[in-house]
Length: 433
Image 1 (cartoon, rainbow, N blue to C red):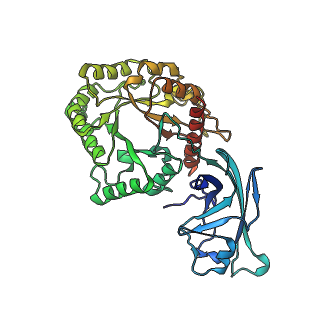
Image 2 (tube, rainbow, N blue to C red):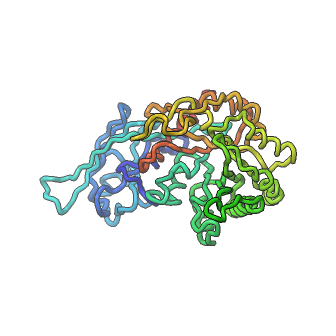
């Protein structure tokens, strides 16, 4: 599993229990040196958490290879090592643990380097960062997941599949959403070895597949002297290919992103017949096709009316609506460096759909992508009004997944902490409804 660049890792920050009692908290620390070393060279780690905790370097416990040690036990032991590729788990005794939310954690890690003059020892590494402690509340009535899209462009550069799934599980989520042609090696024909590893990782991290993102690329042959429109048969073929692959990987929902013909995301006219030709296969596989309602298309729009018409006209149980919470954005996304007003689509300032509109389509909604862009250090979302959105969903009787879809600044590793913040925020809001 790949480690975060920060010495203090986001993943692994949690309270610890012994029986029914919370007895402390723990976090993970990566080796700051260029090599691994014997754990007996550790000289301790002082820890401060805001005004709640301030302990000396001899207090915390250390875990390596699944075994926990006091500092004297490390000094007196032999053979225990801190590998470069593994994070150490540091446990701080604290009756009752830490409260949920964002904490400013400071550490002073001390290591003894044999090849540095003794008068300059121990080598000391001081780090302070804000980390979110995810709540332990179950967050009912909803279920919680994460889309691996949240970690783009970390994915494939500083995150691999296992690391991403570990981050998902660490926030207390139980569901994982993927993009077929974004996260499946060898798409659309992954090897048996890749599929076996996929299921092994799901089992290891206690996750279930939720929604599989696919595409009907209607502009596939739109260039050159032989340019032409995609046919219904081709559109249905693309969808059916992904329905089968999604089923092989254990997914219940498939979101086809259908090519559009207008700025308000009206789908290409082939969508209706392409989908209808695929409904029997969806029923056979027991997979639900669910196109998304995505900004700038509001809930009250002909696109949504057409989706609902297909459901009612066919009576199918295998076509539904995916709601993207970006439609409720009511404050603008800040301009990016060098970006000038008017240069970007107006919907990035938010289309502010009234959450009350959910009631009119709730019975057709099968999945929700909990889109967000930025949650600040006070656990306040800067664009999405979560309290009225979550209240409307609860009042409408929705009990399915809220799948985090971070779409904010893509600085490496930022997405990890942002997803942690969203889960903490949403569960806190839900607990107060």
